[in-house]
Length: 194
Image (cartoon, rainbow, N blue to C red; front, side):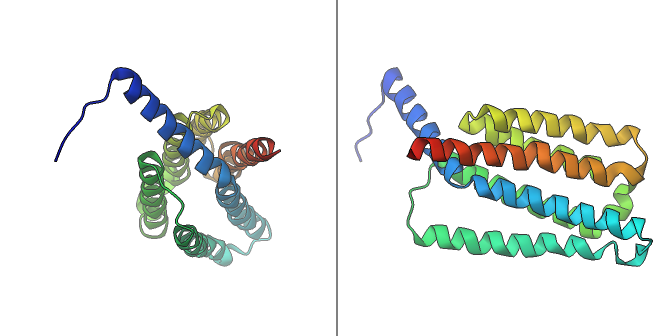
């Protein structure tokens, strides 16, 4: 097999092309961020409403929407795979990182929230922020990076708050770190298609 080395200019061009292709794919799938952000707001908003109505024994039920969301995402990814869209190495890494972070959040939430105690909400937000920041930096989309940084700061806030307010921080974090950047990704895609 013959190997050839790339010049620095060719290497830079290849890296730039890979980042642009990944950014284009991300723009096509901005609704994924909006989906997870909206689902998070629904789950924690439902828990808040149930606790305000003093239906404490039912506050765990909305959390089961997260595994249903993962099933939807699996269906969505299978549908995309059938379209034989080219996938860059960065997109592949981000997709796998998303699954790893998401599954760890679900496992921690369902099995270890008792051990995490009052740190559950902040830990979730900080891990989610890490994923969002990596995505934003990888595809060079500033609103996503800024949303991740704000999500990280929001994640540190609940350490100073009573546990009763952690749901508010989860909802605020979902809006700032997922929904708004997802909407901005969708707007960027529409502007490109005009």
